[in-house]
Image (cartoon, rainbow over the protein chains, first blue to last red):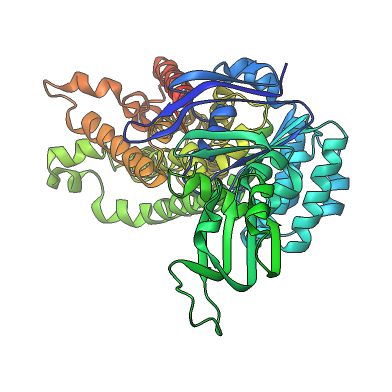
Amino acid sequence: MAAIELEELTKDYGEVVANDSVTFTVEHGEIFGFLGPNGAGKTTTIRLLLGFISPTSGTARVLGQDVREEGSLLEAKRRIGYLSDEPGFDEQRTGTDVLDLHASIKGDSRRDELLELFDPPVERQIREYSQGNARKLGIVTAFMHDPDLVILDEPTNGLDPLMRQRFADFLRAERQRGVTVFFSSHNLSEVRRLCDRVGIIRDGRLVTIEPVDALLRRSGKVIRIRSADPIPIDALDVEGVHDLETSVSDGHEGADPSTAFTECLFTFTGDINAVLERLADYELIDLAIEEAPLEDVFMRFYGGEDDV
Amino acid sequence: MFEITRYEGRNRLKGSVYLSAGMALLAALVIWVYPSFSDALGGDELLEAYPEEMLRLFRIETMASLEGFLAFELYTFGWIILLGLYVAYATAGVIADDVDRGRMDTLLAMPISRARLVAEKFAAISVPILIVNLLTPPVVLLGARLIDESLSVTDVLAVHLLSIPYLFACAGIGLLCSVAFDRVGIAQRVALGVTFALFLVESLLAETDYEELGAVAPMRYYDPNEILLEGTYDLVGVVVLVAMTVALLGVSQLVFRRSDL
């Protein structure tokens, strides 16, 4: 039994289909990143999983319990931690009051440990909290009852870099303890650092789902070339070259920039040997092959249709 | 059980004490003006100058006794109208405000059913209802003694005790609005509007052909005049009010269980 299973989960609001037949599985003990820009449907999926909204069609199970059955979902919720994208707490109460309420309903075996780690100002009223402090308090409420599954909606929004790092380390340690983490994000470097697998959602539809390293491999490399003499652009007519940008540097006035280059930059998703073979006859000054930034990978899924 | 009630009840404590102090002050004021009022008019002469509709609206039966004066100035105006509107308004916020401000997700992520959440939040409205009815009777009884008027202690306690189911029924109207509308401003305005409309229907349609319409209004089942002037307590009315409250709570739970948040 997987930690989370979605089967053609659909939420149709009439004018917009927020989740369109979304199907995927999150295994026990993995960190699963749910990626997409704002408005893609990430929060809708999370709110369906927690029973805040009911699906138009399809179903989902969390920790084996059907999200459409309130009673069975309640059983699962004892072992689930949740952090909302905008955690809301009573303005006039203190952090301690909020934690006491949560403790009385679901337990707080890890409260002290978490307070030491994330240190929200619990003695103060929530109305005085910054966004970061509210998030820290939210993290404590999500983990205080030692859940088996945590569902986090944009968990690092508003956290400073130091806290982000601490939170990332904490999540990795949780995975070591066997906790399953499902989190949504549009922060790509974070996803890359943390996740085992990534699902990408766009306009309510799941675009792809794969391990992070496979995603990076498939997304290709960025190649930068500088040559001593002009190279015909035709030389780069190789399968897998995208977004080619070429230019001719000073001192090569004879070369036609529309047919030749001395400097170029492109994204490459084919066999690297094919490119090196084509370049073997030319004298290069510099050649750099780098992993494509995840932002570019992302653009491939969200940019034009042609590259997907 | 009752974790949410305790928590929400504490939220209401401070406001309830202020509210009760205000109502106690109103009680003191009404009793303080009574002697000069009754000296100046010496009976119900003033009432004859009022149009019949006016008397019916405010349920004025007599001003010739402190009981009659209190029934109208304090209990009809203060309890039936002001407090009735207040609890309807306050209860209209209990669910809608949490939904509006994003607190509902945090609450419902905990292992607590929606029906229980609604019931526990509703139960917390008992804090202002009880405190105001505990604080005011001593002020009324002491005030009456200070102006040398006799008041039946039992009747005064009864008029407060019997107002409790009435106020819960008004709170039930607010609760239903709270689950029916996800914007707190709208929920509260509708709750105020409906409660006041019910009051008008019951008061203005009494003794007309449309009198039966008032049967749905909680105001029909709580009559301070009857309690204070005649010393009779409408226990059937109490049962009706309790039934109304239970029904409104049940429907609210049903609506909330089915709604998308």
